[in-house]
Length: 210
Image (cartoon, rainbow, N blue to C red; front, side):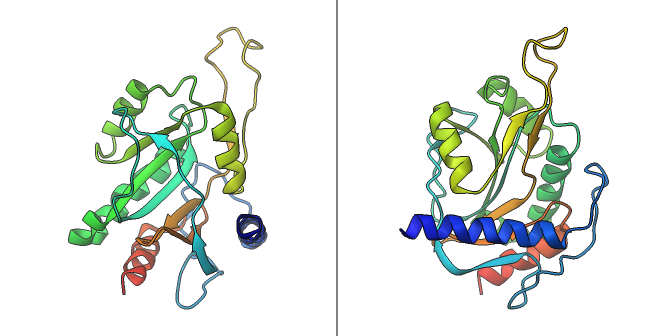
């Protein structure tokens, strides 16, 4: 029942973010401030805070992922993404810079929604262009990935079916583009729409530590 309640909270939060988000070019890197501030947060605070859905995944080095008691900022994406994913990761790099010494208390990750192409080697090379400490997470099975996406209210699906193009690797994946922030206690705390300025995200993370 608690997990169902959390799912409903997430779906309601996502709907609120989308309803308050102006239509935008996914490659624009919009910097408008969210209108969904709650308790001084720039992102959408998911109150009351509840334990985040479990992330059973391995990183690009094959290690079972563990937050190690740190906060976690992450999103669902893929390495062939032409705009949202690289922009989001570049924003994460800036968030880490803004956090200074406190950055050691935060982990940053992308959860692969295209695991067939996003092998550990591909993720390692891709993230190396941003920050090698960022984790590229792969869910073990398709069933578990689907369950994880559902738990977080995330959609992801190929825009062109594999095999319908001249090159089997040439397809895009439509996916939910917001970021999640889990606090050090493992609670799902804040939802950020795509394009939230890194300064706002860093301020929200700092606020979680106060």
